[in-house]
Image (cartoon, rainbow, N blue to C red):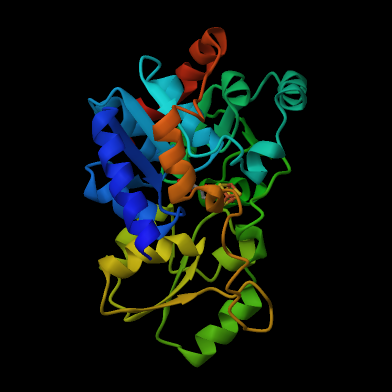
Length: 319
Ligand code: 13P
Ligand code: SF4
């Protein structure tokens, strides 16, 4: 629509005028991903989003995604102004892991190395030895397992149990889940596979174990897009937020992509596999943040210093 075009033009002008760069996640609106790409920003998974901010010369980072992504950007680039289209965009994993309860849990298990998923608050990260994203979680835990370390993992129990199965590490798991990925059903994927036996199955590891078991490839959003290109199959069943289809389809225009069913009857759910918090990012509030400097992410200096250490460990990790 013409209104969207006008909004896009305004955002482009504001990004330039405010010396700002747009860092967007694959689950955000297609128009936002397109804007980030066209204006020299980043469209990325969580790890690449974290790396994008410090690398950029811009003095303002506009992070389109969910709250933990903005906080991570601010922790890694404290000298920059970090804005988000809305500060209300949280994540069920973050909500399900309050810092005080988590800290008490850690206190009960002082013999364990504390590893937290990036999808957590700055306060939870501040209590951790390591932060990981789904793209390097297995490599980092394998490294710890080789050193005989016992692990306390939070908050995603599905990702945690996937890593446990892959590495055989001794992991104590927090009981959290992603409300989007938890909805994928193995039965629905099997039914789709019986219609298209030649299709490959791509799964984000926040999905439950029976779904991960059906996967030809399991990985972060960027890793799934890469796999879509590398796999020989022409049909791909994809179990992650449907925001990923914008970039994935661009990467493989000749292939047929199917949303993994979120109900056991084989029907593809058009509304379930989309994160309600990612969906809060829109052209309007993105323009508003740039116009007024609203939605600024601030992290207390002491907390920042503590959360920076496990984040830096992740960024410096070479498998
Ligand atoms: P990625 O790091 O794979 O982009 O995942 C982030 C996320 O929130 C998945 O639900
Ligand atoms: Fe959190 Fe799930 Fe949304 Fe990702 S998709 S931000 S893990 S609720």
